[in-house]
Length: 428
Image 1 (cartoon, one colour):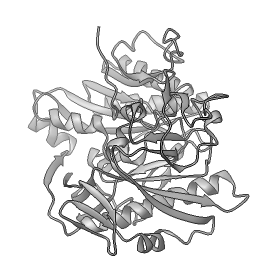
Image 2: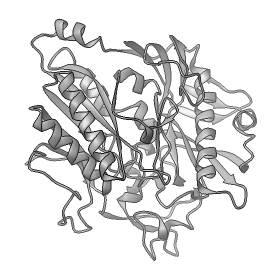
Image 3: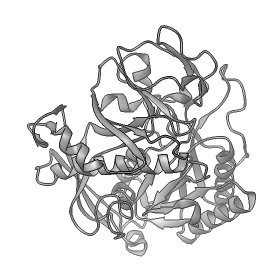
């Protein structure tokens, strides 16, 4: 499967009388966009605000971050099974507006929603402070249940990204990158001397507002399966969860998964990147056993020599991570796990809730319990009255002067486990 990704680099976003991309600037007709994304009976008010890198703006509570994209050639459309028909994506050409993101915010849904500061020390911890953010602030009707609230805001975010993305369709991209994965037998013949490497992509699916969707299907209902990497890059997987902000995978991260991009960089040179096995993170032990058994079976079936495994979330999913690792290792396949740590504010506690001696190659994206003081901002998009109860916050987190003392767990993308982070790790 071959995908051409046309990147259009945006240097500014402005409100205007007409929505268009011109000279590297995204102009937005706010009234037209509101009409396009509105109409949900569960939402009584929607507003759109802009937040640029360096602005003294705090966006919170953040629900999802989505990159505007449009399908230009090939089967399917953007966000298949959600906004488009359930056609297989991952081939043809897709255009993306780079350096731009739709950020959904508004009244808190659950307790695990995040903060994006556009300047100051907080901005250094989130990769999304580098984007020109089109913030869609949604206020629900009174008495709305959490699940209906999350679903309504999620759909509004995707509609917003699709609305902006369609104006990239006829733009000549600044660059076109090509990604290709051939059928397994063809791939092995083409690269007979290169080690076969796969990627096990763990998806947060523990329910209670902890869900991920694959072609529109709640992934807790799937058994592990194979996807072409380009399907993921083309919108087959989207976020629908409120897991801790630091290590959730917003939809933006699914579209720009750094592990997939790095494996493609080495494909045909150092490794043969065979494909992606998606698996879920479960609540009950029997489900964990089933999914990890299937994941290891698929790795063996593909004849893999090495596997990269990434986790989403922490705590209970640590068990899924270690199960996947030790069962794949038991098949004689080398693994590297990518995670983050909850090692206490002093950094000396056990980093993961589970461990095994076979997990001897680990990449960590930071300690989510590290505390930080975020300075006051001139403008808040959203609201901060929930900060004391959000994951990473505590009684007194929100100070009278508007500053916030929290664990970096509360910062969107701070310790993302696909490596889409600004933190780095040092080996010893």
